[in-house]
Length: 278
Image (cartoon, rainbow, N blue to C red; front, side, top):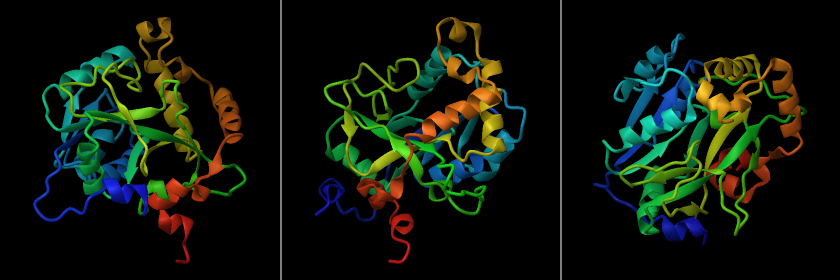
């Protein structure tokens, strides 16, 4: 019996998940179609915060998530502290399970009802969902992904950010049902007690994947919007890069990327990718 069978009880009709996804976006027209198609299946409500987009992002949100809420951010510069404060103020308005993700981050689980039920069964109020940094293997021969197929099924190379107790784990994304998350800058840590969720569920972060012109341009556009406060305090300064630096960073991360189809937990999440002939 797999571990998730113990914590994922069989659920029958009438079960309602009260789960809200919150996300800031700025000029994310490339990733948003995949991201919205993916997460509208997992969360019954979403609050999408537009940070001054000048592309088709808002139009795409209305098209792919017409039942979700779009708000204008009060924080037009990219300031990690103020952005997280804005998120926490919004969290205070809602009840149930709350999760904040960037547009590069895709929550993946076997079954949404089983996943959210297990959060209650395990008895905690906050969990860290482990992250996989998606990094294309340059020797694999990936082609540009298509919108008709989930992005999470078109890329399968990356690095799992594995907890290393007793060291604190800063490599996850937090899901909780507190009044708000009390996040440290960057939202990878909170003074709330949290448990690392060690059953097949991950946040796939499209980090250097798909490594194409659209994603390179996406990374390059963020740096110029950083606030002076963020730069002075070293928050988000990794966004201040040139194309040459980006390419060097990508090569660096390819040294640690692996074929995720060989990982047992990944196989539980994506059996069709790992065992295509079965």
